[in-house]
Image 1 (tube, one colour):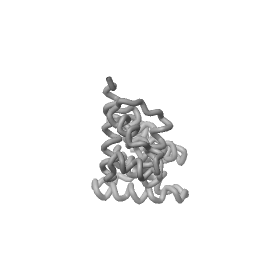
Image 2 (cartoon, helix red, strand yellow):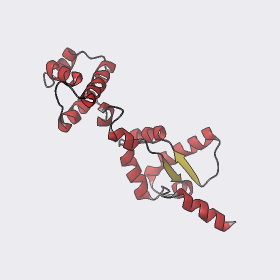
Image 3 (cartoon, one colour):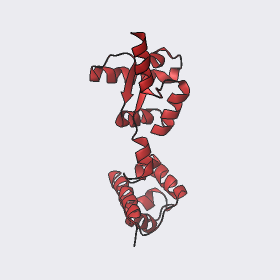
Image 4 (cartoon, helix red, strand yellow):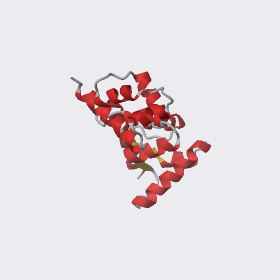
Length: 167
């Protein structure tokens, strides 16, 4: 009997396939027989375990990030759900061209929220996922990049303490 995780994974696989308008036979035809209908069907029912390597190959075939094939309760999705806090002063002053898109996005969020404090801006999980797509990476990969550029606030309380000391 398939585990709950295998069923949930299978359901995600089926959903992605159906969103692309493919039948099981259509997957086999489109892949020139690389993905057999019976095998993909058994993955979708949770009757057959799929290795990480095969899941990555299937994600590539469907042209979606591997994380999109994982069920909502997976640890990867949980890890990606965190929000981040940008140091706007560092972001807007940073010379790296790669950060231009992030800065433009941050300004858009400020406008949308009417939030012009100028110091920090929290980027919610949905915004983080959107930016990750623009950068062709995962949310955690984007967080790593932003951290390397030094534009993330590690401890927002430290900013509040510094502001308190300046008044």
